[in-house]
Length: 131
Picture (cartoon, rainbow, N blue to C red):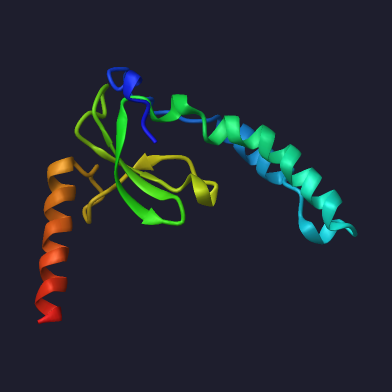
């Protein structure tokens, strides 16, 4: 969720250090490595306490607001301040990926206007199929 008191701050293009992310991912406990489920639960909880500040820091989404939820905690953010202002970014942190620019079919960064028109065209097609 966006911190409304920080919307004027420039959105950070860069997220967590990719090497730090990969190191943490390599250290994620696997359930099959534990005989006792409580031991696994303790290990994953301790790991998540290290993971969340890296990937889910509120600093990562300053200057942005959620404009779409895609299910399972995947989102799309409209950047409203900083150099990326007016563009939409994809948020798949739930799948261990940092935020990244949403791209159109030609590989160009998706502007809000293009995102909205694409959404509207898709909704119109779905409505036409439902008739």
